Length: 257
Image (cartoon, rainbow, N blue to C red):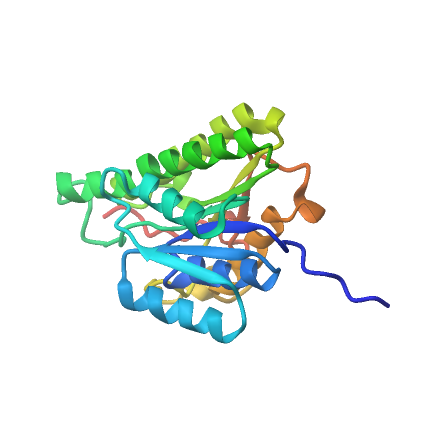
C-alpha cells in the first residue's frame, strides 16, 4: 500500500504559546504533517529550545518572541509570519497568561485582569481578523483552532480566566458564522485536566476523571490536528471539541466554604 502523504504539505501555520505545553505539542503535530510553522511565545529560551528541536527533526520552523499582552502584538506576529512564509493557512491560538489560584474575585488586580483579556480575547480577535482577511483576499480555505477551557462553562473561582475563555468561545462562533461562506473554518479546542504547561493537580483529581488519568499535551494536540485537516473535519466549524477524559461529566469541585 502506498504510504499516505503528509496532510499539510506546502501550508504554513502561526502557533501562539508554542514554547511549552499544548502549544508546543501542536507545533510538532502540525510540522509533522508537512507544514511550515511560525511559533510565537513570550519566553525566549523556551521558544529557542522548541525551534531547535523542530529543526533537529528536519521541520521548517521560524519564530518570534512577542508579548501578546501588548498593543500591536497581533500585527507584529502576522507581519513576521508572512515575511517568513508568505501565505498563512492555519492559526492556533494557545497562548494564555499564567493562571494563578490566588487571583480570586477578591484579589485579582486590574493589571492581571487586563493581561488575561488582552492575550486571550483582544489579541485573539485581532490575530484572527488579520489572518482571516488575508485568507479571504488570497482565496485560502484556512483553518483556525482556539484553545478555550472547561471553565468557559463552569466557574473556577478565577473570574478573569473563566470569563475570558467564555468570550473566546463566543468569538469562535461569531467568526465561524462570518467566514463559512469564504471556506474558512474556526473551532474551539477545550482541554480538561492536562498535565502540561505548569498545571499541578491537587489531591486525587485523576481518580475523579472517568478515564482514570490526567490528560497529556499530546492528547489535546492530536485532536487539535484533526480540526486543522480537512480530510477529517472539513464540515466542522464553530464548534467546541472537548478533550478531557470525561471530566466534564463529573462534578469534581469542592463545595463553597
